[in-house]
Amino acid sequence: MTWKTAVAHIPYGGAKGGIGCDPRELSTSELERLTRVFTQKIHDLIGVQTDVPAPDMGTNAQTMAWILDEYSKFHGHSPAVVTGKPLDLGGSLGREAATGRGVVYATEALLRDYGKNIADQTFVIQGFGNVGSWTASILHEQGGKVIAISDATGAIKNKDGIDVPRLVDYVKKTGGVKGFDGGLDIDPNSILVEPCDVLIPAAIGGVLTRENANDVQAKFVVEAANHPTDPDADEILGKKGVVVLPDIYANGGGVTVSYFEWVQNIQGFMWDEDKVNAELKKYMTRAYEDLKEMSKSKSCNYRMGAFCLGIGRVARATLLRGWEA
Image (cartoon, rainbow, N blue to C red; front, top):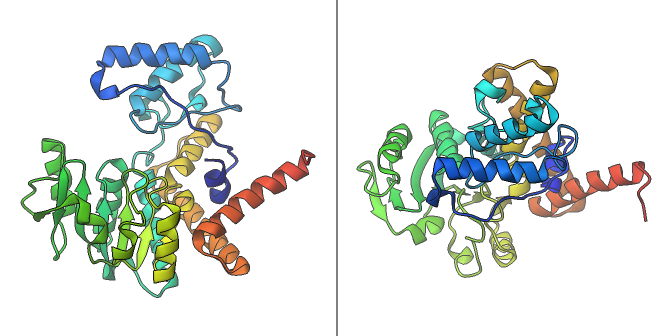
């Protein structure tokens, strides 16, 4: 998270934390009590200018609402202490779609560099949760042809392009993509090696490995998930000439709009959705240009360029504060 926020050029550090449980096995009441007790234990460790939690796996806007309410019992009303909140409690328009929209802006910037655009490319997406579904929907809106999608229930393929809005409705009703009549059911394990222009892993980490990297047929891999490509696969894809856009840049849209939400809360002035999306596009496009320049100057791939960029910015700030060893 520290490198990701540095690459995005937003004034955050970064950490991850949570509670070890399966939220699907708990009632709403149990989840609320668990969240509130957790907040009671950490309320003096988090704060508007200290540490600002945001939702991740197994949490949502409701979880953030409980944290805000519990924190406010100790410190007074503080909407900027968490992001990803419901709109009625100071959440930001555009936050729900932000990671997926950021993935699309990153893909757009990458393709433009290669003289291509979204409308003339084919896409395969692994994962159809928040990130995968929003990525697929926005690509579809922009004329991109999404030809295969998978989730935990199965995988579907349609070489003429999947009707994404209809699939979104189907998944809301059934809970998964399996059985959707707008495509053929295929083996979910084959999703990453389907022929396409752009492969977008948007599910869990560690899915591209030395076992399957040689079989990847995409020209571009855009990492919407965290760490979907292991180091062996990274090396194999590089040798094959596949361009990989790394996770610490490509999926930075969520944390960027979290930053916008924090800014809006501090100002007490909410932005409209067009402004949120326009600012996100500006940040993602600028970060891509910075990443490209760094990769060029160091003669390295985009992943190494992103680490050089992020670590370099943190190191400079550290030196300026006089923290050198």
